[in-house]
Length: 189
Image (cartoon, rainbow, N blue to C red; front, side):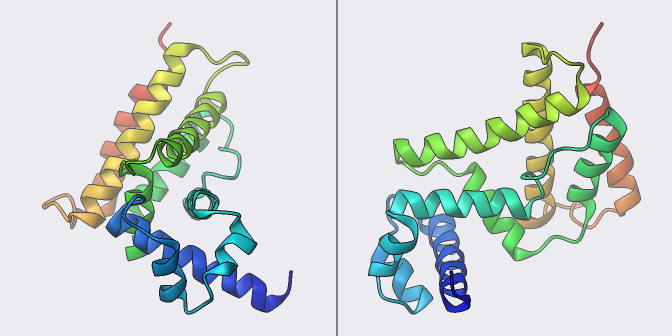
């Protein structure tokens, strides 16, 4: 793929992510996305196959940007460090858009299935990182709860800026979050 094609794909994903996050999947048109990106609408089908393909690319980008595409570090301590670091690092407006894509129902069954699949894959990797060879249903549920805590904390700190959490000292937030995640991710015996 040429440098221009890669740049165009990136512009389309950025424009689509913004539209999907604010307008929702159903209300967003490929014409709106193309206009926002300043390209011909035909390029969406050329690069992504369809609106759904572009939505999948947006979620894939979210997964990559949130660091959830790489394997979760093996072991409880490394997994905790990665999750806590994500919540307390300096958030950006792009992080807020990404969270809205992961959390907002799209009103479209296909798009919602893609979103659920993305969240489920990450929870499975997290459970595998902290569990033994065999991931139990209980550990998978605990990993999904831990993921919801991380997403919720990120949203409260940056998207909605709930105080005093939004401006709380990073060390305080990190310690409390690590305690909560440790309790969730330590398999019961």
